[in-house]
Every structure is written in C-alpha cells, then in structure tokens.
Image (cartoon, rainbow, N blue to C red; front, side, top):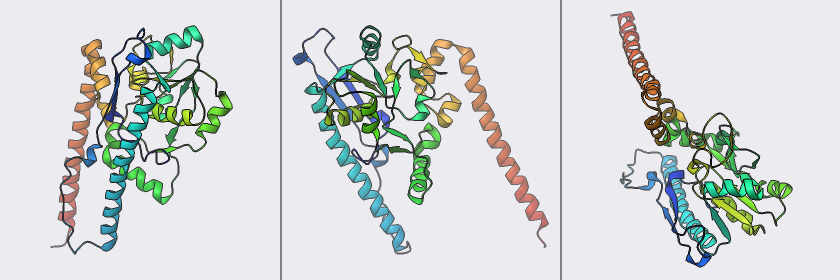
Length: 295
C-alpha cells in the first residue's frame, strides 16, 4: 500500500458507523471512523542495544522503527481524507443490502477490488474483478523479506498473504467503466475499497458508491453470491481457519450446532496429538544419537 499511504494496516483496525437511515436528507448524515494503530506498535518495551550487536542489526532496527512511525502518520492522513470524502458525500455509502437492491433494480455494476485469495472463495454474480492489491508473486530479496515478516507477524495464523499495489489499477478500471458510471466499489471488510474510492474520485469518477463493511458484512441473500464459500468466510485462512477459531466460524457454529463444532474439535485434538508425537519422536532421536556417541 506504499503508493497510497504505506502498507495496509490490519483490516480490523477501521470501523465506520452511520447514524442516518436511507430516507434522511444528506445533511443529516453522520459518520464516525475509528482507527487503531497496528498491534505491533502498542506497548512496545524499549530494549537497549548493547555493543555486542553488529552495526548492521542496529541500522535495520532503526529503519523498521522509522518505517512503522511513517505508517502511523500516513494512516492518520488517510483517515482525514476518507472522512472528508464521506462527509462531503463525494463517495456515497451503501450497506450490502442497499448495494444488492441497486444491482438488481438499477443494474449498477459492482467493482470487486479484493485480492485473488478472497475473490476465488466467493464473489457477487456479474461483478467485475480488478484488485487494487493482489498477492505479491515476486521472489526478489525485498519481497521475500516482506513475506517472512508477514508470516512471522501473524500470517501463519490468519492466512493473510503479502500484497502489492497494482500500479495499473486505474488504467484497468478506465478500460471497463467510463467516468460517468454509477460504480459500486466493494472489498472484503471495507478498507481497501475505500482506498480505491479515493483513487477513483481523484481520477475523475463522480458517481462512486462504497459498500460499508465490505462483502463480509452481507447477510445471506442480500447479494447474489457465486463461489464455494459464504462471503463471511472469504477473508479467513491460515491455522485459525483450519481450527475453526475465527469469529466468523464461531458465529456459524452457534447456528449449525454440535455437528459443525465436532469437525473443528477433532482437528484441534488431531493437531495436539501430532505435535505430541513429533515431540516424542524428537526425544527418541536425541537419545539414539547420544547412545551412538563413543564413550
């Protein structure tokens, strides 16, 4: 997300609430944006650097800290821009249900800006897919470093991949939609689509509709869905999805009953048994190697 305001923060760091109903006048609308800094920036203890660390390590730590400070500043600047876009109604706000009505009754097109990992699980029927960020498939040193960092900072748990901004995003949109199109823009949680709306408005689009909360906020039947999974499950992955420990899966378990829960309970037990077996196996290998050593 460097091209906009630095790398995207965790998707659960923004929430938007709207207090007016559909029938109220525009001037009665009120929106509130709540952002929180990435968890990696909160309550970070200071660890003094001792002389035993190489200068290269010290420089890398300084670069990382400067990078994170810049990320927070850029996020704050983006917050002000987005608040202005919504408050001044340069970008109109739709709930998923309202977006579904607009698609069915007015035949408005929906632009899906999600990455391929989310799009392939569920999508709105007839929608156009042009991701503003997609999975970074490069393997240069800088990209590999980011991938390792993403994995270690929670990607293994959430399944979140390393994404890169598509510099041709606006060109691809212009090929599909004239600037006078009534364009509905959606992503999984509502953050990346809001960034896309800002870029589209700056490029000359004036009839932009943003889906508040993203496709994840849609209840079953509000949007005509295609794909193997519900919209709410399109954004989950990693170990948390495998074990059924995401909020979306817990909500589904509460509705589906014990049969749904038993599947993930069995996976959890199996994971612990596998870990225990690996631990015991490692101990046996150590004992075997020790016995083989000459006395």
